[in-house]
Image (cartoon, rainbow, N blue to C red; front, top):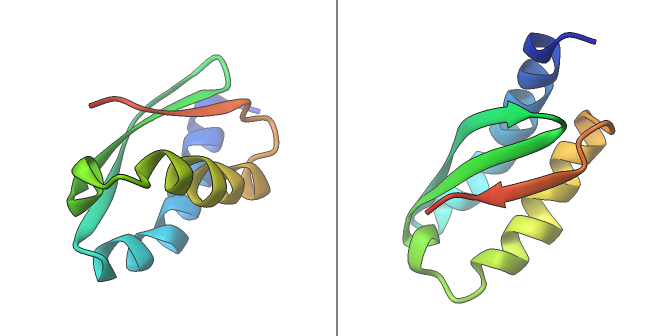
Amino acid sequence: MSVQEIQDKVEKALEEIRPFLISDGGNIKLLSVEDNIVKVQLEGACSGCSVNQMTLKNGVEATIKRHAPEIEEVINVA
């Protein structure tokens, strides 16, 4: 599978998550996909939220892995 295909799957997963983040005053941006590691940037209220790591792992990473099982980890780049 090409990097572009994986990025498309990740973007589709983020589109699924985005409305929940926006409703809490935040958002998420895909920065890159390299070696099955996804780098994202939490924005708005999400960037300073005390539970953002839990949201990242339990919400964002789980959803991305459902769409693209080859992804190993999702990292927030501040």
